[in-house]
Length: 139
Image (cartoon, rainbow, N blue to C red):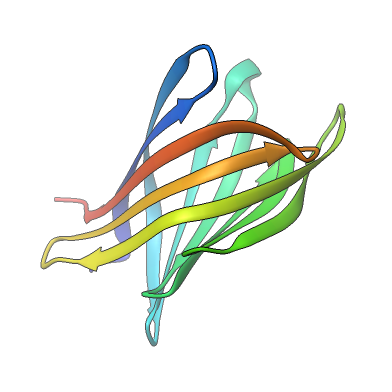
């Protein structure tokens, strides 16, 4: 893959009483080190805040680091429960992620990641999330 890539993140969050769909479409920078693939990209969030994202993926797991108006680190590993903090200007929230499915696939023109995970905020189940990440060369 080339250095300049397009990242499309499709997220479906299922709460008890409704479902929320979010799509992020960004341009970023790709690099590879051994079996790990890294993508850096910016995301414009509600209120005009910019978040810098660093996604590191390999066949076994994915890590997402977010900095800017928020700070968090999320790790996704099949069958594992991971824990971190979600730090905002309004305070800190303890988050836990239980990864139910992590699939990593490399094609000639695309890297695809599929995730399904449960999200817990301050030890309370919040939502089930289905996430599809597509990383492609910019034509």
